[in-house]
Image (cartoon, rainbow, N blue to C red):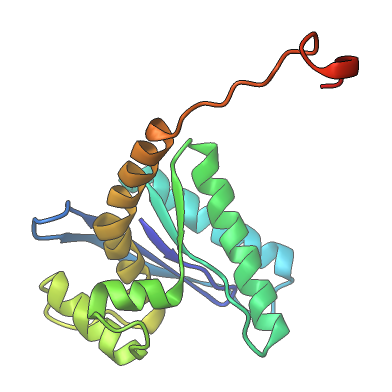
Length: 183
């Protein structure tokens, strides 16, 4: 499941597949909250929406857009709060959570880390063999996150595990061998 966090619009995309095989759209939606509500109520709405999708689709992993600094601090805060809710929802279920940067996602789906929203949406449409581009852009971005995780996330986890297994383990000297018994 890919999640494009946002306080006003939080995109959710569920994609099934594996590297080297065609990917399939399972679901795409956007949780919308009203700016008229207090932030805590908006976050509860986002949590309920994410929880419902996690219950319904039972994904293997959750990929969330990594927050990066923008000029508007209020946008950053709302996005970070929604991302935190998404992480908590996944962690409650013991699901692995991956954070992908916007440029990583753009590069994965379009080959260009500086692609615009229209290019990302067009590539998501092509990759998933859809009749129309997912709207709004938050929906396409969520699907792009899910695609990125399938293509890069799983392989990166295997690489990280292999590197960790190949590292020699370091043993710490016992207190008896250290001068003065310092640990």
